[in-house]
Image (cartoon, rainbow, N blue to C red):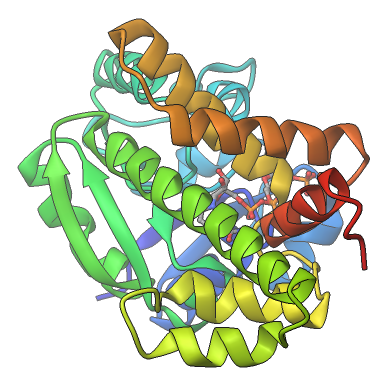
Length: 294
Ligand code: NAP
């Protein structure tokens, strides 16, 4: 069945996710801040819109994949935001990684207009977005989840309804802690190997088959060895995600020393002008601290 779908935010993740929805045969209305980001979607047959409001006026279900909490706020509640165009009975699915607390506020504002909201952040990176193999962690009501499920299946593989509003964002925050602390561990291990005069590529190969093996050792470890820091997942976005974690932990009085340490290393990357690099560039911070730069 062809559905009327909206998509807002057409960056590294949003563009391939929207293209996969188009490939699944749906009619698509898109909005990006710049015409250039909309061009590949328009070429594929989507209709470009001047504002989120215009998207909402045309679509029954609107997906969002923008950068940070204030961006989602602007898209939903801003002057020409979705709340000014949504029709009762429509749904908004936010696939950005943002604050769980703010998510609950946005869901309430949409509910007041008769629209359902789901938070549905993703994991799996650009490759997962292109290949429609993303992990999707969803928060919100069961009826809205059932309605959105076929569209999630066009974008991802491991689709889990975690709980009520904000629960998807909490799951994604957990994901980012595990990823960040593992990138830190891989950075330290590969630098340790090199400083001991041992080939870090061979160490990675040896570790891959044992308990230290992981997707991060495989993908980010390879990026570190190849010195290929093209994003992928930008360090500035990872810094943003750990700020979400640390702010929430602060409110809860919860100690998260590992996450706090890596957040400092991401701050250092930002300070040295490397925020647009992939977050595998954490290895550069570790190297700089010990004069082990490559
Ligand atoms: P990105 O490449 O920087 O794309 C973000 C897009 O959002 C840009 O096209 C940006 O427009 C647009 N945008 C931001 N604010 C907007 C607004 N107010 N109105 C309309 N468009 C707006 O980032 P990304 O890597 O796709 O990440 C998007 C989200 O997915 C983030 O929350 C990120 O944490 C999450 N995520 C990313 C990955 C990954 O591997 N990249 C993996 C999982 C989750 P401009 O082009 O005009 O700046």
